[in-house]
Image (tube, rainbow, N blue to C red; front, side, top):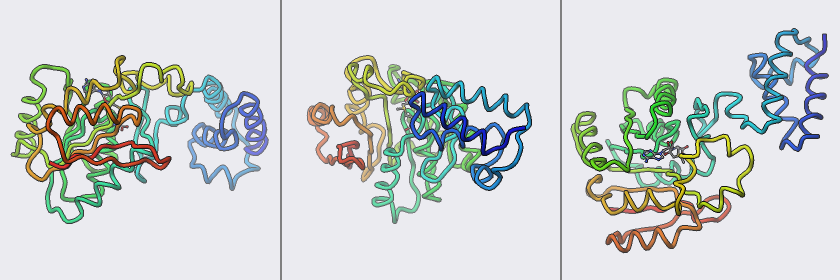
Amino acid sequence: METVKSHLIKKTKLLKNNSIDLPKLEARLLLAKALNKDLNWTYVNLEKKIPKKKIFEYEILIKKKLKKIPTAYLLGNKEFYSMNFKVNENTLIPRPETEIIVEEIKKNFKNKKKFLVLDLGTGSGCILLSILKEFKNAIGIGIDKYLETLKVARINSKRNNLSKRSKFFKLDWIQKDFFKQVLKINKKFSGNEKFDLVVSNPPYLLKNEINTLMPEVLYEPKESLYDNKDGLSFYKRILPKINSLVSENSYIYLEINPKNRRNIEKICKSNNIKNINYIKDLSGKYRFVLIKN
Ligand SMILES: C[S@@+](CC[C@H](N)C(=O)[O-])C[C@H]1O[C@@H](n2cnc3c(N)ncnc32)[C@H](O)[C@@H]1O
């Protein structure tokens, strides 16, 4: 039988020869997954022999990686804001830059006693659930268009002990009575209609950006990534009526495509939304718009 070490060496080489980024780490992560062990185990058990059945499982994972399937999908989870989130092909893989929303919210909601959060296009639930984890007095609703996506968000709320303070609903922001439905759902859930905080990371890629994406990204749900138009559908639909969803002194944090910043500014201006600020991501790009009501 071959050892952990010999397998890691072989598979690292194979991944490297096939232009997989971080081949050493990938080989290790996938071996840990096949063996059902944590990553640490693979560092301290280099001379351990691997049973045949497990080698077979490892080979399958490696083959999938060679097809550029994202590692988060192969592992079935992704860390976001130091929390563990289940992910699958029905959810976008949470991005590290999105964590900035939670960091920014911390600045404005530090002293708030109780507040209500709405997460539009919740996906794995990562934004809403990390806000609730941070603020013990917050409760919130996540909405998404897809039931299969919401199933994952609900599992994540349980996994992180947040199911009492969060609820997830299937709603499409395109539908005619969307705003009415959101208020109704909130009334039932919290006793209030309006929210103190609205967050969203909507689909915002431009059509011509699709051809520039890494092959891994093409495995993610396309409805998470783009609207098949100008990347502005969400903002055009939500911003004109955002006031109907939020209470006085509320905050709205929306992730944006830096390339669409000026267009989003125009949408805000034409809807008389004045108090806007932009927040940069770690690479210095304008990645979020903050609207204070
Ligand atoms: C970019 S993903 C964000 C997921 C998650 N919030 C995150 O940051 O990882 C956008 C989400 O919006 C959802 N979505 C797209 N169009 C929608 C619509 N018309 N109504 C409701 N949700 C929609 C997608 O299913 C997807 O889960």
